[in-house]
Length: 425
Ligand code: HEC
Ligand code: HEC
Ligand code: HEC
Ligand code: HEC
Ligand code: HEC
Ligand code: HEC
Ligand code: HEC
Ligand code: HEC
Ligand code: HEC
Image (cartoon, rainbow, N blue to C red; front, side):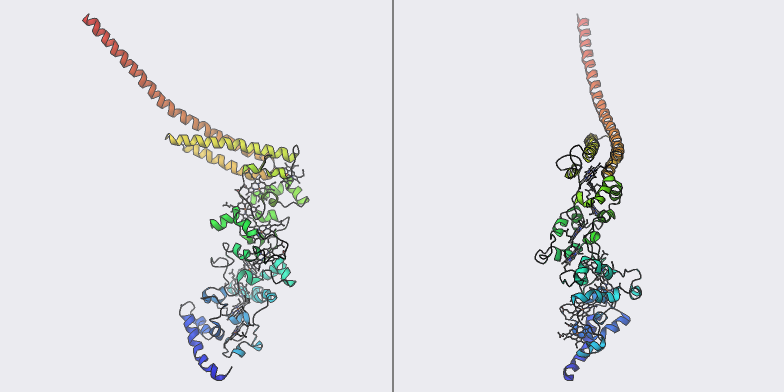
């Protein structure tokens, strides 16, 4: 680069970066000074790879970690070749295989990271290298996700920021880029319908349609950096991070033990993984939709228990349903239904708990709960019946009295007429 060409550029360097960075008033004090004399920025500000407004869109820029911190080089040097020379530490653009180490030079160093964020984890690279993505990258497979596939390179934001590609609401889209692309994934022998299934599942609908952050995104089951199928034994534990009781009951059950011995997939055997649907009592028992029948046969322990559990639940649920109809009637006739409401609420609670308890596959434990629910429901039914009766007794009682009085008046009328007749005669 000639000296002549460089001269006008030198003058503009400071002006242009000054305008770009001071304009929005985003950075202040010492940082502004550092930015305005940053030659990397001055030359690269219109770079296509940098997002518009990039200094607001990336946690590194926001925290004053700039081009040379990642790419090396000398950001005080105005000469292109010197600024980006290997002697000044310029490493340029990392190859895909170099990326984990490229990010890891900071992210794996506790002493370094602690200065910025005392509580940030520093095991991402380590975890990543043990994941299917990381292992395959190590073997030279360039199609797997590297750090930038999920985080981007120049638009990195913490997962708590709704704009981030790793924010819970955006994670499914981030994984979908590759995992739903059947052409891209052709050479691998795995399905490409995870997103499609997930989007229609209870979890996917709760997260993506309702914005319920308590519902799992892909990384809640697969880990952020350990992306591996959860593995046989750990599936119940993955689900159990949220469905604690279901996991506890199932793990403690005899069938749970048998599942481990026979290498069956825990929760997944009955509920699936990506397409998990909301449940119903029909899944239990010996009917057509009952999943118990996938493995059990007429007459065996599982069959008998399945049938018994289903009957216990149906007994209380059908009484509960009729109790609700009665409560509606009480409301319609304008009578007090508060106590009935309380009883039904308690009954509902027992039914909900019984449905979780079915994971013990124990008729005694479930039986206690359903009996509890049945008792409360029965009380509600009796109270509703009495209330409805009271209403009719009052209404018909009033009717009968009116009828009686009318008859009396009529009788009196005839009696008076008769007396009149007798007097006249
Ligand atoms: C005087 C202007 C100028 C300065 C100063 C400058 N660059 Fe560059 N940079 C360029 C140009 C022009 C290219 C494209 C060169 C090419 O395609 O061979 C480039 C390319 C790059 C690339 C891509 C390299 C590749 O292999 O594709 C990176 C990364 C980069 N610069 C980072 C930096 C960093 C970091 C700094 C500050 C330490 C910096 N640049 C300073 C002008 C500059
Ligand atoms: C957090 C670390 C980080 C920072 C900070 C950073 N980069 Fe990069 N940059 C990367 C990584 C990783 C890649 C390669 C992956 C990619 O291109 O997606 C890259 C790629 C590039 C490329 C090549 C793009 C291409 O498609 O070949 C250029 C040019 C570049 N960076 C310039 C800059 C400039 C200029 C800055 C400062 C404004 C900067 N980078 C700041 C990590 C960083
Ligand atoms: C020069 C050191 C350095 C390099 C290289 C670097 N980072 Fe960072 N990164 C940081 C620091 C420091 C923070 C914390 C900034 C803060 O919170 O103020 C950070 C923050 C982050 C965060 C947000 C963390 C959170 O949840 O708050 C992510 C994600 C991230 N970096 C990913 C990457 C990726 C991916 C790469 C490689 C492409 C990379 N970083 C390269 C230093 C670096
Ligand atoms: C398969 C996608 C994926 C890959 C690959 C990936 N990350 Fe992440 N990363 C995530 C997700 C998702 C989160 C956010 C999880 C959350 O907190 O909800 C995250 C969080 C982070 C954080 C914030 C702190 C933390 O651990 O929660 C840092 C730093 C980070 N990643 C760095 C890296 C680095 C460095 C690499 C490469 C070695 C990498 N990531 C590879 C998906 C990925
Ligand atoms: C850049 C593309 C890409 C992105 C983005 C990506 N993956 Fe992958 N992933 C792959 C490829 C390629 C494989 C290797 C497939 C194989 O060998 O079976 C893979 C493997 C996996 C596996 C192991 C599959 C198996 O049984 O072998 C899991 C689990 C996984 N990814 C989960 C995720 C999750 C979760 C995300 C998002 C947080 C994600 N991936 C993002 C490309 C990607
Ligand atoms: C509720 C937990 C859960 C969620 C959410 C979840 N997965 Fe999975 N995923 C699993 C389980 C369990 C397996 C199967 C593990 C086994 O049987 O070995 C699996 C398997 C996989 C596999 C291996 C291939 C396959 O289909 O069997 C990939 C790839 C994958 N998941 C990607 C994703 C992506 C992408 C998302 C988000 C769109 C996602 N997963 C969401 C639990 C989950
Ligand atoms: C991050 C927490 C989380 C994880 C992990 C998780 N779930 Fe869920 N799950 C939820 C939430 C929240 C709901 C309620 C969604 C809604 O609003 O409908 C739910 C709903 C369900 C339902 C429907 C319940 C009903 O009332 O019909 C089933 C079944 C289920 N999950 C099974 C699983 C299984 C199996 C796994 C593991 C493969 C799993 N979940 C992992 C949070 C989680
Ligand atoms: C042997 C089959 C089977 C296994 C294994 C199984 N479930 Fe279930 N699960 C069911 C059936 C059947 C129902 C429906 C009960 C009902 O509504 O009557 C159900 C209901 C549920 C519900 C909704 C009711 C509630 O508790 O809120 C959740 C959540 C659930 N299961 C989670 C799990 C989790 C997590 C695991 C693994 C720890 C698991 N299940 C293992 C069969 C199973
Ligand atoms: C994926 C296959 C599978 C499904 C689905 C399944 N079971 Fe089982 N079940 C087993 C295995 C394996 C055993 C242990 C071997 C045996 O005793 O037959 C077992 C045993 C049992 C036992 C006997 C445990 C004891 O106390 O000895 C009961 C009870 C049982 N299952 C109930 C159910 C119910 C209820 C359902 C439906 C909600 C169900 N099972 C669904 C595989 C399954």
